[in-house]
Figure: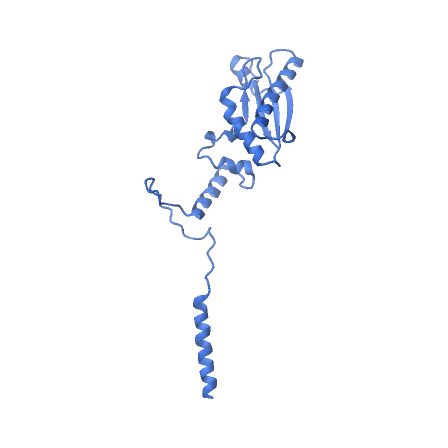
Length: 195
């Protein structure tokens, strides 16, 4: 009887000690308390908890109506302000009677070309548009030249031809329906539309 009692006590002690060595599971990042105090900018060794960074990223995406599962929309969050991110620009404007891409749009097309190269499953339609001046046939041809100019720059920056489709609407789909220089300048454009 004494041996049975000693074995029982030993088993209870060992069983209790075993729980000391079990690892406790991490709490879910969404419910864990995270120190959200700002990190001093002059502290080079300061690092922010990656879970807090991800939580803020998800909250910002929801607030802006972005889908983090969409690589393009997720890429928009990589820049502090959407307007600073060239991927947010989806319209290229042209001078009168020209299909030459302005220098100000080169960084935009570089960014879209790199994005397409990094995401070979994505597709883009490039729509060419003109203002209302000129014949219908001329404007369709000019719209196509504008879309092709954009396409060449996307290809030069890594996009593949199979990812791109060129369409011309000429004067048929104006952005602004007025007939003045300001409206015409807005209508002379190429639209970058991801499928």
